[in-house]
Amino acid sequence: MMRRSTLLLRDLGLLGLLGALTLLAAPLAQAQTAVTRDDVIAKLNHFETDAAIDVTALRQQTLERSKSRLKNEPPPQKRPPIAPDLTKLPAFNADIAFDVDTPIVMPESYQTVGRIADALTHSSLLPYTFLIVGHIESTGRRDNNVLLSQRRADAIRDILVNTFKIAPKRLQSVGLGEEQLLDPARPNAPVNNQLQIMLVAKVADEPPAHPAPAAAAKKPAKPAKRH
Image (cartoon, rainbow, N blue to C red; front, top):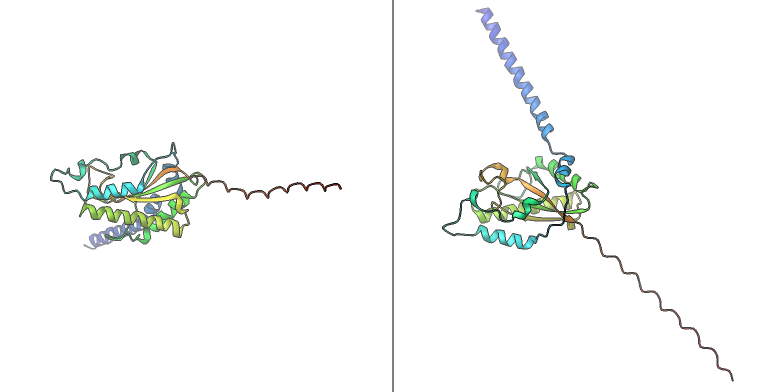
């Protein structure tokens, strides 16, 4: 009986030790999968040609489609993407945690936003402009999802501009809601909440400053008349 009790205590001790090691290993595993600046650069540094994107028109088009009440409207997994041309752009998909139904970025995601900022200010990406694209999984009202995804994309842009000092002219934002699911086969999957950073075009060159007009040359004085 004593031997059995001793073995039981030993087994319990081993289980406790394994549990402690698992808890210690969890942060290490998370650290290994944390986003790095180089991860972002590797996804985005593939510029080919400028993309012509009318962000204002795309916002309006997305909102209008999300308000569709047609009886024959296809389910989310069968809807065509609202902006298929965006799928051709270099993109980095970021898992940003937001507070429920708000554009408030949770503290644990600020490191990811910081890594994105580090990448955008790296010499290899500094010459380009970017589009921040918000997405939402297919739950709740479609039009509300578009508005929330726009507010979240705007929130990331504001953080990059105001906190990390990225030039505002390099960043635009648009929310596509559930109108362009990242995983159409699983419209309710969390992956559809990811936010995308897309490389769009080269930064437009500043127009050269016009030099001040040179002072008009003085006319040569007329020779004095001879009397």
